[in-house]
Length: 205
View (cartoon, rainbow, N blue to C red):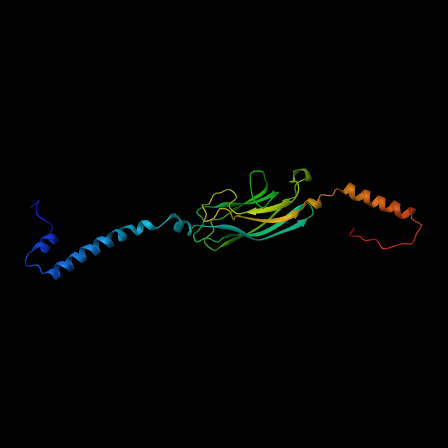
């Protein structure tokens, strides 16, 4: 029976098989052949993007920095805005930087362990760090960074939104006390040698 034609073909070649029925069978075979590949391929069409969209995504919100003498008091919320619980614990990092991005050149001031956050849950971070010495600060603008998953422990939906930055000093703030005192001394000398009328001093000069 190995050489026997398939049943559908035998039916179609049967002399008693009407042309109408032959057309119906042929249409059915064609439709099955067209639909079957799509049905088989459907599960494979799921891309990595759909899986990634359901991953955890850790961010820092509501960052507040307060100066307290020689220290900085820091308050922030580490939140998981992704669609899945974080796969493991991670570290929230506090650092000093010359920009708003955490890199190997930045000085880490504090690390706080954060539990495995479930989707749309947050962790309230509160810590206090010492202000680095002037020589340890970057030149120009100085930012305080708080970065979620600073140790890259969690595979996230997005890896470039972990940090929140607060500008705490600018290049204009870097005026030494000696320069300020020299200006005061000069002004005092001018006042002593001036025999004219007193006039209001513009303190914003």
